[in-house]
Image 1 (cartoon, helix red, strand yellow):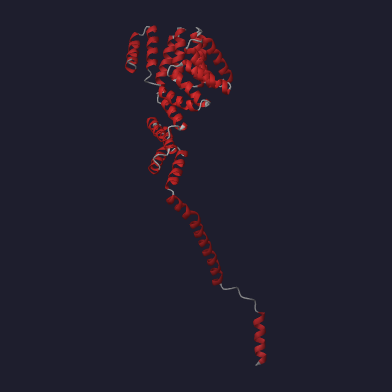
Image 2: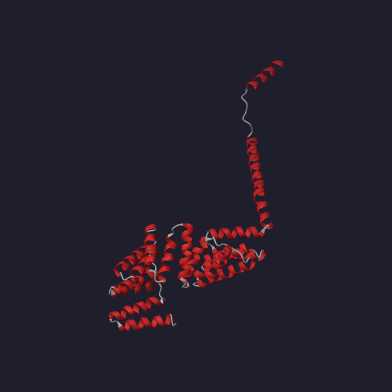
Length: 330
């Protein structure tokens, strides 16, 4: 009996160990998987639930973030809606109103932007950004006189702001104050060194005052500094036409058109040089191109009427004079 038991024990010890049951391996993997799920759930609660809580606790910050993302993606309609909602929370925040106005201007609704900049200035009358951008919006809308008034307000408090002075110089030129424009441009040039844009503005101021020599000197320097400055070539063409060199004027206007072929003014100015040179067909072609680019340009109709009259095209001239009077009865 003892011998049989001993033999059986020996056989059992010599047996290779069996693989662990499959259930135990599956159970181990299940435990690990559940642990990962629990960790992910904890991470969600850690990262997302506080964010949602912050959004609920600070709706203004959430709206501003949404608006900034919309502006970055050029979705100005959504940005405007977000800013308007934010302003229901902070209706007197001048910076916030200014951001709304910026979005309105970027969307192309310049009148609404002007109104909003005005609201920002009601909240903070000395808000330089609102004044500057409203002035720019006024100029964009063709109201250069109001733009000059806003720039005046800024420069009363910040006389050394040469960026604003440069913008006022251009606005003064547009309202027919060539002397003021030339003075502003000169101060900017003295403070900042030669700038092609300010040389062009000062030159135009000089030209409107009949100072052809100083104007051409400024424009020569501007073209030397910035050979691709289309406006400098255009202005020098006008200056050369004023001193009687129509061929040189046409060459400068042609270069301006090459650099910026979608400007109606450049075609109108070259047409005037061509008309002086008796190139009436070329003048009519340029003026027709100007009207193609800007169909309701009274000046283009008037100049084309003159060129057609000189060519003997009386019917065409009458039609163009009629259109010019309709568009600009005064």
